[in-house]
Amino acid sequence: MMKIVFVTFIATALTWSGSIATEAASPANADNDSRSLRVDLDGKKLEKHVYKLASAEFGGRSGTKADMTIEYIKQHFSSLNLMPAFANGYIQDVLQAGENSGKSYGRNIAAKIEGSDPVLSRDYIVVSAHWDHLGGSKDGKKIFAGADDNASGVAMLLESASWFARPENRPKRSMLFVAFDLEEFGLFGSRYFAAHLPVEESAIRLFITADMIGRSLSGICREWVFVMGTERLPQSREWLMKAQAGKLFKAGIMGTDLVGVRSDYGPFMARKVPYLFFSTGESKVYHTPDDKPETLDYEKLEAVSEIICETAALAVSAEKIGSWSEKPVPTPEEMKVIAAVLEEMKSPESGLKIGGLQLSTLEKTLENVKKMLSAGVINEAERKAVIRAVQFLKLTVL
Image (cartoon, rainbow, N blue to C red; front, side, top):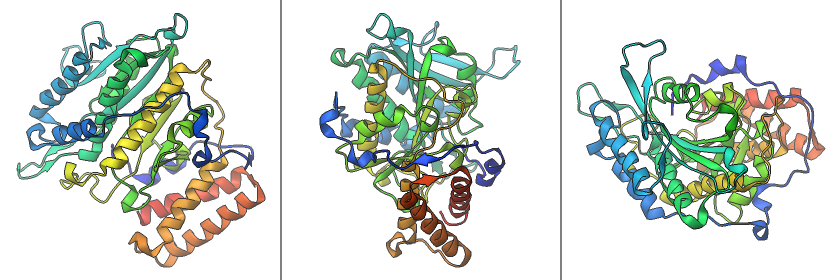
């Protein structure tokens, strides 16, 4: 995941307006009988991908070792008989803007599946993850393996592609499976892809990406994966409720303005393409050599990958997909998730050291959130105050 200084986004946060009724159903209460499908991914294969991509052999997926990663992903797509997404194959060279020499600064890898429906197949759903990481230290003594960042997301991408490649799971809409380069360097790979799409931009109805889905936020919130972007496509909340129903792990909806642009959804958000961003959050080993495959939570990775894949499956089969909402549409579910996270932060079992201003801010914010939910209406000013407080806590505590 690209490192962004958290407070720099506050000035450019999205504008939310209106009030929120608190009658929306919690994902945890979704009816299992309403499911139209069940995605079952192979947890052992997910784990195998992570161990391979985060091995010393792959050298932190950067520099001279990048070719191995590209070949690994390309061979997986090829083994599934997926069509190359680009006219010249699976690889898209990422060129510097205005570059005339043809020099490649990175490479995206993408495959596609054509939809089965003669009309809906004109639409595309994108499932993606970035494959690059930080490489090794300058002295060569340390490798930044990037097991969670983002071998976990790539594992989800590869096994989701495997699931959709089965004849019985062929989607009605068309799909693109994209592994981005240079996410760690200003989202340059996804920025280039968004500007040089293999299909018409208007054909992309939903962009899904996952970045770090194998741990938990600062060692707390193990049962959560956080999902951002539903405010621009409220219809997606129904898919999420169905996708995580019956699982031990929950999809926690939050507004993107809480964290800003942190991964490859950024270029699509800028183009007003509906997006969903899945992440379990930064851990204590984020961007360190200790982000190793043996330390991931593979039970969680499997469940989260299934939630993502099933969300995509529901989207590709939906009769209609809404368009980008110019005005973000918040949900009381966000406040419920924030309350749950604050409760975990406050718990002595969290291991977090919170005192002084942080503790008083946490307790006051939690009290205010509970009052809002009890009252049944959350206005714009109240929500903004909560978001500012949570941003402060995230920056100073987590």
